[in-house]
Image 1 (tube, helix red, strand yellow):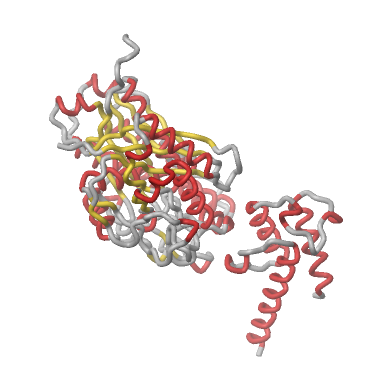
Image 2 (cartoon, each protein chain N blue to C red):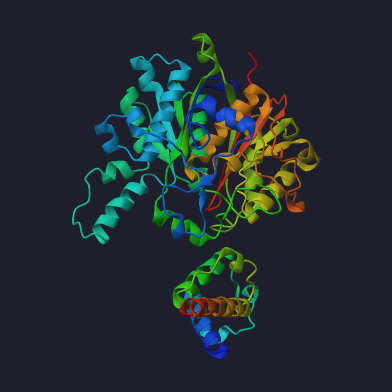
Length: 410
Length: 90
């Protein structure tokens, strides 16, 4: 093969979302466009036992509307969300499975916490209630790859299938990996994204001890920000080569143009602007772009004191004077910080923003912070014709993954 | 509990948590001098909460830069706790 063959372009033909601001892609996009936040009083756990009382939970979710009883007994809530998002994405993409396609499709998902809520229930029974047996489904429900495996079982996909766990960057790493596989020809199609559902008392107490959860709401880049708000949900994408999508007449929702990954090698929980900047530069370069071509960034924007200032410094480092011409928003202000699903949900938000030519806002914004002096699209969505965008994910452990997206004009 | 007792207990907790000899930790040592970062800070708060069986709110935990900050903050919280107990007792 000639070395100068240009890599295949990779497009997104299906998007599925389950989130605090919508149980499907249409509801999710409507909320983002309206700047409507899904942050509300915590229901899964008694907030009297915690120092914080708000969360971005998926409300009014009935597993029985999506799964039979046997399936429910085998699927933790995090896997249920992942499977439902994948079903939506696959249906939207209008895939007609053949054996050849099943063999050449990859399923790469991200999750940080997996089915720890299932494990927690079993262990409470064991340690506190003196029930000497743990449910035999605990292991298959808890494993981080439970959603990926279930999607494989349902679709009959038998290509490379696995799960990446890199804390808050999990699903950006997963999507980036899937993107590179389709681009290189290692896979002809990929189902990729992430899912998370972790509202158990033990897990929330562990977050409380980190002292980064806001007692009220999530105000990214705002001077009075008080921390992140935890959220749950899932998003899945269908990726395929542009030529294959066009050949089968698929609806093209957008393109993944590049991916960049880096490690800070700095501190286990403190972010480093240098590591974040390296990942952004690498994504821009992987996409064959120059920094000035980027018009929008869906920020990691957790609303912790250190992330938002550090991310602002990283953006200034990469873009220089062009940073003042880039619109930046954190949609975590609406769907919360979904940890291992964050990259996937924010990839969906970025793709929808480019497609609809409307940039979602940073909700709950109240006061500019000189340490976060970017155009953060405060509170109200904004029409904009943007061709290229980035979506940032920076994880505890110093692991960064950034995706570059491109609008595909019909 | 006297201020001296409180100081001694806080020094012990910090020394144990940070695996340092107690004589290295004086009431006037700053976290920076001792080489503590933000993660060390929340771990010390966790240990202090356990030692004194008290809940330290995030707002009170902000801006702790020295051993003295921890001792003084804790003294205030313990005083408040006693006040509450007195009120309940009345």
